[in-house]
Amino acid sequence: MTRKTFPRPTPIVYARGDGIGPEIMDATLKILEAAEAELDLHEIEIGQKVYERGVTAGIEPESWDVLRRTGVFLKAPITTPQGKGFKSLNVTTRKSLGLFANVRPCRSYHPFTRSLHPGMNIVVIRENEEDTYAGIEHRQTQEVTQCLKLISRPGCEKVVRYAFDYAERSGRRKVTCMSKDNIMKITDGLFHRVFDEIAADYPDIENEHMIVDIGSALVADSPEQFDVIVTPNLYGDIISDIAAQVAGSVGLAGSANIGESAAMFEAIHGSAPAIAGKNIANPSGLLHGAVMMLMHIDQTEVAERVRNAWLRTIEDGVHTADIRLADNLNPVVGTDAFAQAVIERLGDAPRRIRSASFGHGHEHAAPPVRPKQEKAIVGVDVFLDWDEPGRSPDALGESLSRVDGDGLKLKMITNRGVKVYPGGLPETFCTDHWRCRFVADADGATVSHAQVISLLGRVAEAGFDFIKTEHLCTFDGEIGYSLGQGE
Ligand code: NAD
Image 1 (cartoon, rainbow, N blue to C red):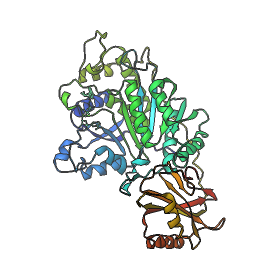
Image 2: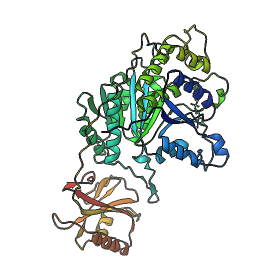
Image 3: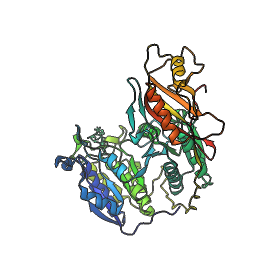
Image 4: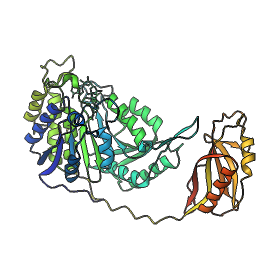
């Protein structure tokens, strides 16, 4: 895959943010300058002051132009205003700029800082745009609500390839995919399948798949066994918080949001208003965001220099109050003094913690163009809101069978995915939400849109309240829908 190239000096947009934001941004920029990062810096304003001017997005419209032009954003934390009407700047930026991957390294700096897992050093890469986070939800009946989980092939391809590229460039040896494809065979199954396909392009990097429940338990219990984890949005949201927490580095971690034409880098902590303006905040989280930014813009030597100087500073016991252990007899330092200590160590390597060594990755052949698949409709699921006394599936099935005709026949009814007609069990609890599967009444026959519309007409005429339909499709003859439990 052709990677984007960046001019030198690289245009960067930065924002000082709120609370401790300005202090930690100044400290970070001072270190980057001393490390001779080649940056062409442009400042924009975000956060509280912008919200107070009545701009509900927290960022002025003209700032988007600068952001889109430069494509690289180093962002200090902001204070998110309480109350309705304000939009989360992070969510807006992620969605507007198409930032498809969230990258969060979580590691322990034992014995210099507190950690439950001394040997832990993992990176969680979370898909950022799809899954249940598309925000498509509906209340469909009195009792039943629904959230659509959307997983696309291009969405999977982008994030999985990014994970392998990241592993290659950061000298990591293994990528673990986590999904729940034993249950969600089509959506999570696609994520897993794409992972297997792309893994084949990276023979030097180990790959494995884990079911997300046991996988997350292992992240909490023995994270030393992981290196890079790639996973869909919802699982990634949870796993990245577990990982940051058990690493003990919540205050030290940076994160990146990566898109095809833009990327945003930040600390994972917030604006810490209680300690703002006191010169005591730890700038390490934002500095780690900046190190990821340097890797992203291919200034890897500078990234290594900054990272190694930071590791050496931590090893030398120069700590801000938030991470200082009781047995550290060195004086506590503030934000400026910590930054100065890192600057003094530029060019040094850590003595005990493995030093950072970033690579450049390889160009990979463009993915094959996929031929368009032959799509055919072979049936339709009609969802009903039906709440007759007794909620008898047999009664529903018998009256609904009367709408059979015009090439379609009722095959089964499920309630919350469990087959209840024909031949259901009386013990199965039924809600007021029924999925009624109609299929072509001749083997191998396909179904037209007109047949589906005519079926819906008959369903409505018979007095049923249909909520929605889902076509049952095949793609090159392969079934593209799940079977009901017990079907
Ligand atoms: P927080 O991360 O700001 O603070 C949690 C605790 O950690 C506090 O005790 C704080 O003093 C401490 N802390 C955080 N960063 C520190 C640092 N660099 N050095 C030393 N101590 C540090 O979380 P919060 O209090 O829940 O949120 C405060 C504000 O930040 C809220 O308005 C929240 O919405 C916002 N926030 C913004 C972002 C972002 O912009 N990306 C992320 C999270 C929270």
